Length: 125
Image (cartoon, rainbow, N blue to C red; front, side, top):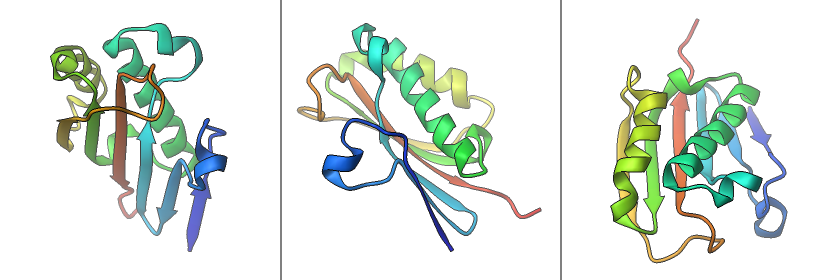
């Protein structure tokens, strides 16, 4: 069974994707960026908000941040890594998912400094 989860994000309708998809006990969360007033913040503020967006999608899928097994982070400036790492560590330090961080030339909106995607596995009960 497949569960598609939307968040009314800016590009979901025009691009044709879901914020998250749950199949069985696996949840994949699309690359997520900061929203609204958080776009005026630095890379730390944006990363914290992106993780909040991920957490909400996971919750709707019946999961939580503690179920995250992998994150992939895209940054437009590798110099922002310490700020983003701080936000990531605050959310995931006790969980320790595998993680990749890469610099890209641009993201979908020029205000975006960071985009984070996540995968989670909900343990069998």
